Amino acid sequence: MTAMTAMTAMTAMTKPRPGYDADLAGLRQQLVEHEAAADPGSPTAACEVLTLRHREATLSGGRPAELLAIGAEIDRAVERFPAWPDLRLLRATVALALHRIDLARAALDAVPGLTVVPPGRVLAADLAQFDGDYAGARACYLAAAREDPRWDTCARLAALALATGDVEGADDRYAMAEDEITAKQMRAFAWVRAQRADLAAAVGEFGRAERHLADAELAYPGWWYVTAHRAALDLARDRPQAAAAGYQKVLADVDRPEFREALGTALAAAGEPAQGAAWHHSALAEYRRSADRGDVHYLHHLAAYYADVEPDPEAAVAFARDDVRVRRNGATLSLLAWCLHRAGRTAEAEHIVQEAFALGAGDPVLQARAQEIRRAIGWP
Image (tube, rainbow, N blue to C red; front, top):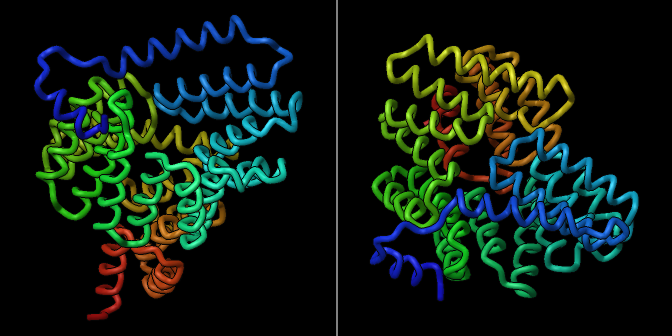
């Protein structure tokens, strides 16, 4: 049964479906059982436990501190079982979530032939996309999809299509991903619907975005991830009070600084500037602590914050350049161009825009920024 068939059947049901809370409780119980039974000398057991820890951390919020701790645990397991490929794949996955491209590449390079099996090909494609090699990423994703068709590989192809400006193709790919999802994978279905909602909102189709999020909420109740997307849509639709309520609900489950920043923005838009500023400053403090530790996953947020929330153009440019040094792709170049524009360095901004387009990037945010930068220059 496909996810779409499952959704049709589900709409006729009156009993609420099990959702986020039940899944998280079940996953945590499974982790306890595996930890208790794990053979310390078995690489399979070590990988199973670490995989469950990664899943639990991701489902419960994907907080960088937890992912960093799991990465350190994986490193210790790798020291004991250096040739175990699944540990290397897991290490690359966690490293990419933290924007540590160097660690991800090292993990994939450590075991010969790892990037020619489907999971390794997918991660190699992720790396290529991080580096702005969109053609290489597409080739790797397609090769993995031919060998092992999976909904998440199809979803990655959708994200790649969006990154390169093919909005219609991106939605088509997400629809194809849904067709690969079974009735038992409602979280996956909800995730894809949230991506399609973002895509619809990006091109101004707010009604369609609303419908996608309603489907996601019905399919997988109680998930903070969908609530966050709903709050973002409310903010985009000039409903700041609803957005603020949504972000407050998210923060009750997942305390991440990007959600604090979003709540601050919603409160400011709702006419509560003092409360908004307090949440903004709380988010900024966490971003800065992360960067001061040498972590890189909040550089993008720092650049955007200093560009648009609490303007400090030179700081914005500095953090955006740091972000580009970590991963030079359309998204990071787009933000660097925007920061340069906000700093009054519009000619430099246009040069960076051209570099982003030359890579093959073309997502709606880049397109909108390029248009504004070129208007400032005086281009038609």
